[in-house]
Image (tube, rainbow, N blue to C red; front, side):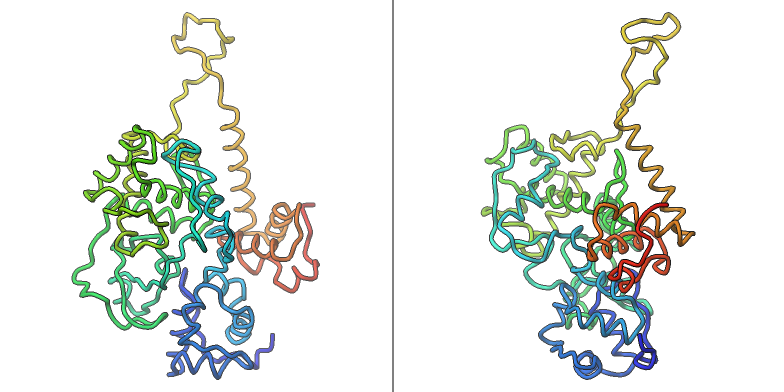
Length: 414
């Protein structure tokens, strides 16, 4: 990388910031419009910001990321994570439209409903979490600070609240990446409901670390996002299309939100096609469902439902043989959950490996080798590096793109 081509000033991206927001701040440093920054300062790259700016937060051209990395020193992988494309395959499987995408992403598992209970759906040209129009939302307290910036997660209909202040996000006006004002008079920041804050904190935890803490155990971000998207589908299911017991559960969830069932909809449409006002109601219903499930008020019947329930109490084994009573112990014999124990041991070992990789470059590359032992594809190794960085492994401990392409990094554990 040639230092002579670096811009002399380039503020670092904020944690979770979207690409268009960072580019806007970059342009402000040089007293330029973002159109001038992109059109005249990226070498041979030609970008029309007024047409392509929103697309930069979804699928920026690879050459733009490469040139930005050269001009600013920010690694290409980090720049990619400032757009939706950098979160494949966790946020969504692919940006391409696929007829089986809905069944694979939303219906492969279930939460409240029994497996196979929900009616089949196959909406055309569907992609998870991407709204019809680009969203621009912000926290009033964050936007009044010294460095107003938009986060990627707040620009898709995935959360309702700010993870730092707990305030509800509010719609802004202006072009993508720039805060010009509020779409409506914001007034005093309004705190989000406790159940909503809990749900959103989990999403932000997953985006920051790659793992989400649930009552039963921690799960990968990809599992959490599919659980949440499936739950949004279930609370939006017409009552006539599910069993009476499931219909009662859905009614109970919507009653907890104080809103009409399915936010008053008559015709079913996928979550991403709904107006933002209806999407907000759906997210509130999902938060209520999570809270009611964890409190033991409703019982989930889906394959992912047990993740939301606390581990059941299991008395300690007194050492007696199965079926043989012990006068000194009145606790009946129960077999140990060896699968759960094995999982806990595996997670503890993985955490030890990650902790070591956070402090030792050799341990970091050894861990990368473990995760990529069955696939050395360049894109897979790059994605794995991104996941390790999100888990707290310093980026300089891992191979760069050139090393990955050449296959010159340590291939596996020694």
